[in-house]
Length: 561
Image (cartoon, rainbow, N blue to C red):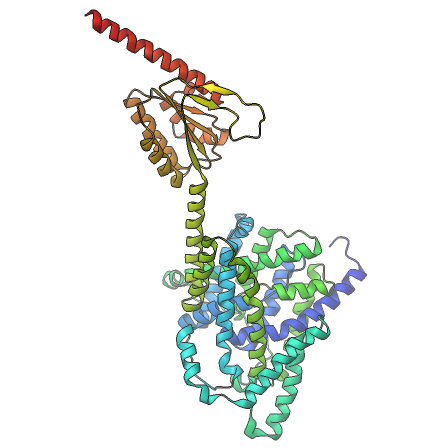
């Protein structure tokens, strides 16, 4: 901000006003779909949006309620009520701050892409399914929360579809889709809401028999007062029950905000401080619950709108929050007139944009493991809930990753001759003669618990004649874990019990440090840890020669006797 200028403020002012107008219908729609009043959606966008812009690590990020949270928020409210939601959001905020303080911002970016696509597509389908009641004006009051029973209720209630409400929804949908074709800068959702609100107001005024439900019909007259901060009760029982939901909110919020920031960096050429961004998001989620708000995260669509209209500093995001505050204070009575069918159309378009069906189609050409993770995450999100989907999706992805690493880590066995340059780009080859009685095992890849078992199996299946020396070549081992160290210790002790020497070769500094901490250097002998395979083979050959000489002397002495 040290080089901030009047021209920059003008650009930020225009961008902030436009984003504020664009954010209005989304904040209202996301709040209603989440099971709370439009007032809470606007309060969340105002307070959360201000804090994300003021304290986050991305200069153009726009924060607020997003479609990704609809399902998790709805489920928490249904089970634990609004106080449970406030506590879960507060806990999620604390988790996000801790993630930022412990520099986990870069780690979040490594969550497998198929998981992100899977639960995003699942959320999109679930949001779409929640809007059918308002879209078709069915007037259902007890719609099941679960996906399959919900659609069962819809199909059994087809006779209750209201044609006038459906016409309003379809017209709204056409306007939202058509406006960007005229100009991408025009907010299609807001224009649809303005046109259809006027149309429905006239219809309800002069033709009451064709009444179309509005926000006012659903929520009554809404207050324009800023809510007084309220606390909430903390006890270990509630915290334990809400911790999985809080974890899901934190993970989902961090993924969405950092993904939005990454996209923004690609467009503006700026650099987001990932950990600062998580801390900013965390503080927003800590503060918002005291005002009755719902979870906050960075919103890709609003952030891109900000960039497109010239926003380049946090001032634009702060102005967007001020615009929403002014609308909240002076225009709330007009929001009561917005038809529910129009908001349903807004969310249908949001769910379509979230679905990423083209990305899903492209991922179907990937390896079967990635496809499996995507489909499982998608189905779990739709059929069960987002918490289970993220947990099992991450677990499945880790299992598949470990399997791939294990499969790609090779255990090679050499005897008689060894090419030192094998596996490198060297053009000159040095062939070492390996004495009979020496076996060389090379581990090519990380030596961790998944590979340790594979190494043991290779040792057992390639034993043949009992060797006198075993060389374990570790030049391509980047790290070693506790399981591998334990297995290596067992191997050394069992080999020594059989009179077999074990020599380690090419151990890098980090792996050697782990081995020294575990006492392997003292067990094997420090001279048995060699810097290069040439040194290791020379030592092994000398050991074999010495052992053979000792055996020959013993045999000769036995013959004399």
